[in-house]
Amino acid sequence: MTATVIDGKAFAANVRGQVAEHVTRLKEEHGITPGLAVVLVGEDPASQVYVRNKGKQTVEVGMNSIEHKLDASTTQDELLAVIESLNADPSVHGILCQLPVPDHIDGDTIINAIDPAKDVDGFHISNVGLLGTGQKAMVPCTPLGCLMMLREHHGSLSGLNAVVIGRSNIVGKPMANLLLGDSCTVTIAHSRTADLPGVVKQADIVVAAVGRPQMVPGDWIKPGATVIDVGINRIEKPEGGTRLVGDVDYDSCADVAGAITPVPGGVGPMTIACLLANTVTACCRANGLAEPVGLTA
Ligand code: NAD
Image 1: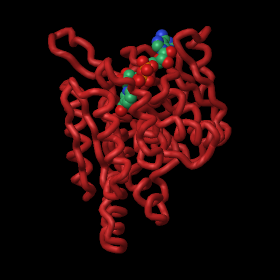
Image 2: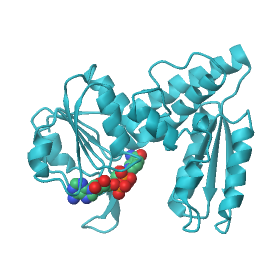
Image 3: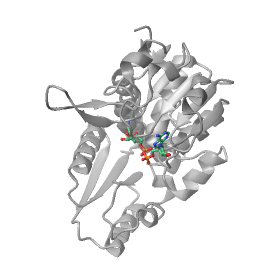
Image 4: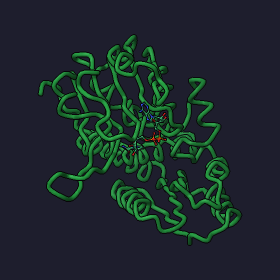
């Protein structure tokens, strides 16, 4: 293996440390405690784990955590009423509704009911538009985490060829917009891309966000490229049990790449750290205060 391992766990701890410093400053100098509200509908086990981790880390950085756990039978109107009450609450600076919501609720309607200034997931159509037009937005947490690690590793990203594999609204598209904002030449590849190996081979930066275990082998990677693996896939181990792997084949890619994020311990820990960063940013903007440097796009 030749690649530098980009340690997302350590990076995320550093981001949380910076967030905690800003929270202390907001409390001591302005008497403001940032508040993050998380709404969960139903009992999806994975969502419950995410929400628990978000609440725990929110409290650890000194912010208020507000949790609304609603029954799976909650109607769309009841959920909208909860969102409205959080929109109107000045002690709440960030709101997210854990996805997926049950089938009888329209996820887009719920996301677009969140006050865009409190939309710390960055999924509201206004924030999507602001990001797409290069304006100040709330930026989706996972791509923001990837961008922070790339900036730290490369310094300037200007002029680099970036290939994003995956065109989802929560990862692929916002990631491409962020890289474009940092003056990369960006290609978005997807399930219908012709000659995906040839496209990936051109990249100085590869961001894989596909959801297919170990799909990208080392011989697709240009020597020295930076590989950011967003995928989180659980696979069976030959000896029994399961383990987490990314969308890239770590061992063969690490032999060729200049730098690579592992799974677990790469992009994953950055997502909640960036959620906390977005909440502090939203709090500063809501109060007309200077926002943290280095914690936004
Ligand atoms: P998604 O299913 O919404 O999108 C997957 C994308 O991959 C699609 O745009 C599709 O066109 C593309 N794709 C599918 N098969 C392909 C193929 N054979 N070749 C090229 N492209 C192909 O997924 P998502 O929500 O963007 O998530 C992607 C992965 O990232 C998943 O493993 C998910 O678990 C993970 N994820 C991780 C985090 C994190 O915090 N680290 C956050 C979000 C998602």
